Length: 179
Length: 238
Image 1 (tube, rainbow over the protein chains, first blue to last red):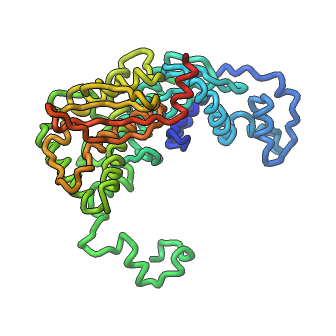
Image 2: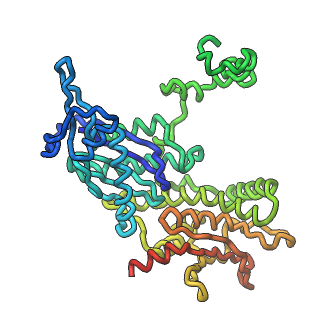
Image 3: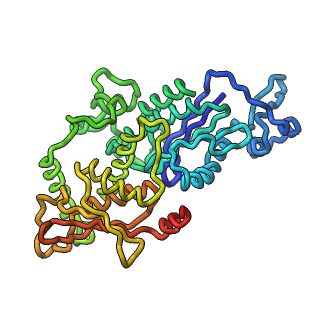
């Protein structure tokens, strides 16, 4: 089971992203649609198409007999697209909801999108597959603290990508702890 | 030079490439031996490395307060530095405003973090009036240690608000020469206010104006002219 975190600046520039594979078992329910999809398509967009149509993953039989997992909703570009698409919903909610933690704000196939909006309009977007409200809230709170510490540093400017290895390590540690 | 991919550097002669290469720099600029650079490139923290900012708590402590004179000297230097690089009063005010803006974005995040991070469900302000109230009290307290003196709403224009400070801390030791009487160094404060409003989603143009009265010769007004979108959004809440 994986989690995908994106930190987006007020102008929607991605400043940091993290993919976290949780040790906890995944209970993904396969979508009925996925069974009906052709798995022979080899076009460049096959992964995107299958992901959009609701398939969780497509297993392609290789000539060696082993199954190679490819495409599906786990592709990095599909993940990114889902995260970006959820921004519309988030911006809508942000105008009328005064909470910073927006839980399960959007849903796409197997992915649920939760978000956290800082007062300065930074958006933390997390894609997850299972329900874990309390854990995600605690995770966001820690990431928020780390982010505030990053941004009070004079050598960090608002739209610069966060490259600090310590920041990365801390975020990974709290992901391991809560997700 | 053999370690470098030759295709990239084919334009440069070997001697100029040597000059550009940090490893071959003269002893005067021996960056490679500096400990901070070494840790950055290898990624392994040395025992000598400074404590990093992620280990420090963000909460305010008594010892973290800075004396007003230290600040006054710093701000005096800021104004002098800027003045050498501008062509007029407007330019100087604009630069002070930009400086304030950068500070404002940080003030906002830090201030709200300090009040809200302990809460189970942290909140942001989404209505304009609570925001301007919180600028008047909380932001002023966080930055200057005291709340501002008044908030006024313009009678003629409904998109204009004013925050009034009878004795601004930052201009306490500043005497503006007569030929620059238009200048208000509180443009710096205006920048902070603009950043806070912008961050919370209330774009506005914020300017500072001297409005002396008999009792308060340093009295300053921060004028907030709200963007049209803010008024439209406020209408939706009604």
